[in-house]
Length: 139
Image 1 (tube, rainbow, N blue to C red):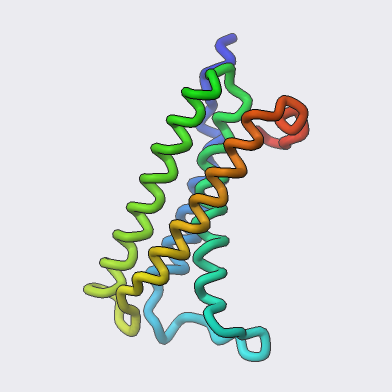
Image 2 (cartoon, rainbow, N blue to C red):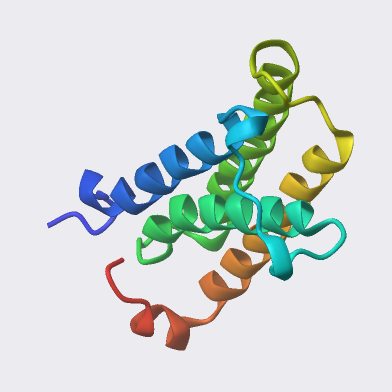
């Protein structure tokens, strides 16, 4: 069996999270839930960091247990990260032109990018540590 072949099933969590991110970021402004007492200033930026960081992690994790060299994994992680940052920018443009009650915010793009970069860094650290790889479930 080729250990570098990754089953499509391993990408299902990432695909599911992708649709959750899209649903959350592309709903009309009036449908965004009010968090009430739990609100703090710029909480939506933390949400962006978590959404896009999680998306990056879920798409990078299937590559961690392959026999690819560290450099090849790093290149894959960079491509995934750049695609997700670009997707965050595209979402902001879509919000601006097509979603009522929503608009383009550079701080959202920055928060998306911060989440992606944190996840990228975590994936690099995990791929350098053989002990952690054994403990990652489902991947």
